Amino acid sequence: MTRSLPLAAVLGLMLTLAGHHPASSADRPAAADQPNYVHTVIFYLKKDAPRGADKALIDDAFTLLARIPTVKGIRAGLPAEKATPDVAVKDYQVGLLVLFDDYEGLKTYLDHPDHVKFVEKHLKHVDKVLVYDFVQARK
Image (cartoon, rainbow, N blue to C red; front, side, top):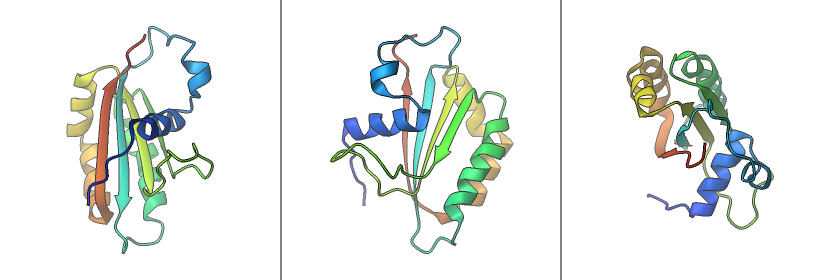
């Protein structure tokens, strides 16, 4: 079953994972040297996934994925316990946000042996993945 997420929920999740608060970051332009290609992945694990599969996925995001040369920043975690009332979606198990300078950086990442290893290791426990890529509008 595919679930469509409200735009406000998706944006709120991405900002939460990035460690930004809309009120403070919206008023402040990003530094010119900040990466502006954002790759967001929402993981829904299978009901029979082994205990700790979510933690293993997060740990490997920081060990395997973060060392890929084109990765400029990474955030990974569980749904926030305190979230935007009435709009925050919390039915997933792991959120991942990866920053790149550009689309070419994402392409390199997707083909990199560490990303391939990550996918091979964790895909067997994943029921569904939602991917949102966007380019930061302001620099």
